[in-house]
Amino acid sequence: MEKQAAVEKQEYRDAMARLGSAVNIITTDGPGGRAGFTASAVCSVTDTPPTLLVCLNRSASVHSAFTQNQVLCVNTLADCHESLSNLFGGKTPMEQRFDAAEWARLATGSPILTDALVSFDCKVTQITRVGTHDILICEAVALRRNDDSHGLVYFDRRYHPLMRQIA
Image (cartoon, rainbow, N blue to C red; front, side, top):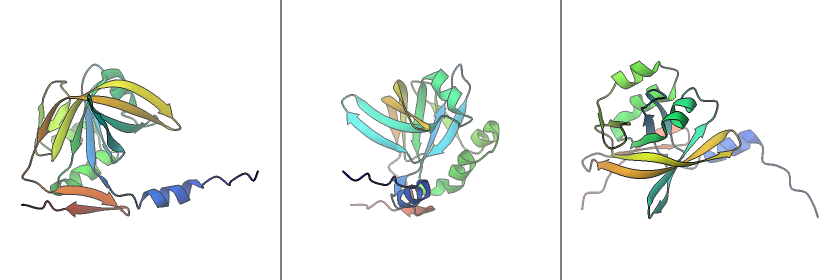
């Protein structure tokens, strides 16, 4: 049997750039501190119970806050949030990140972006290690929707607005 060559890291990254996805700011607050980061590696797992997964690099500066707090909010960004996404995706100090927007709180105490397209307030129920990342399995305990905004997706290493179709 012939052994298949492994996919090269850069080839994989270039291919993943062609996988369009929603842009999210993931936030937490609690004993581990207030923290947030930009992520596109988020998806639904099941609706019973309502569960999402969030991928978090273990070398990220925010990793310990999320694993200590065991709560988070997935704030799916609207098309007006491109600069906020860049702020939370960079090396900007945490306080400046949060000062750049308006926040509220729901059940877990994690910061909810008030004008997000949708916010899923979650408790972390399981963490699985895969390669360089942790997969956080998160049960939604509350949510808030904003039906008046358009979406923001990341595709081909660029942001693109996603327009809602009004029926």
